[in-house]
Image 1 (cartoon, one colour):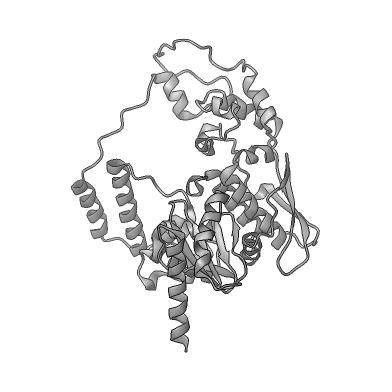
Image 2: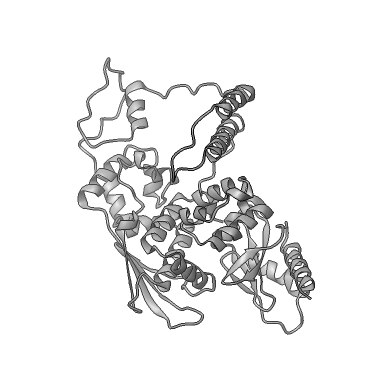
Length: 409
């Protein structure tokens, strides 16, 4: 299964698509169409554009198209020169797109992912950007979790084209063999390369990392900052209390990264939800939702998901990915005995199992656990603790819905 929590390609596309679309309401409409299966499994892609016929549950189908600016000839040449010097060249020749290349420093500042300004929309409904193009954008996000090389194709670098570029000798590339360390750094004369690679060529290695600070030292510096008398920042900057909280959180993450090897969260929205959830309730203002480019109800749903299941619950709420159909079918078979006879069949799609009759959806998370959701308004809400098996997750959802129904009577 693809790891959606560590896919910078899908995240970069998602952020560009959101900003280019501009309307949170349109994005939510498209996401609902996407979740309901309104976007086909096969997307028509070629360099510079991707399209599909989008079929809303309540609306007319329309062919939506997203056009993506392709790399110029000079950008492709510069990018290929940078890539031939990386240790990822062999992976690229095998048709892979390593996540490390999402860092522009490794691609000579030629970003592979497009910016919002490089996306334009067209649709048969003549209202683009619209719910159809939004649904298509969400479908592309899902596809990039499992097939990140789609992004290079859309940017004008098909696998064949990229292979030709990487296999063509670059006259500016340094000759193979032992490199003696010069007394002074050489002045670059050819296409640029990443800074860390230039240092390795010049110095013959990377500097030794400093020893991680002790917990006592880290806590002392954090407490010193917390005790400093500082003026309140001018609006619209965050309050001083928020800045102190962010500093303490950053120090804690740095300490755990150095001492325990704990990886940092790569999804900016999930990380923001984690930070917001740790704030006092009075600090959770609605302007936070707008800063995240989402509606306040969406933010509240994600905060509730974080309360129940932490960051994995936020990921389960936000991301869909292509799961093993056999796993979903087996899970659906174990849930079926819990349902009334004659009920409509369960629907399996992506990593979801949906019981439309009971308004319940069970999602298989990237951590292998099963997350119980219930329909609420125009979206699904995580309503109970995740479970290690789909039956327990389904039962948790039934219990919560039964309790809610009883409290309303």
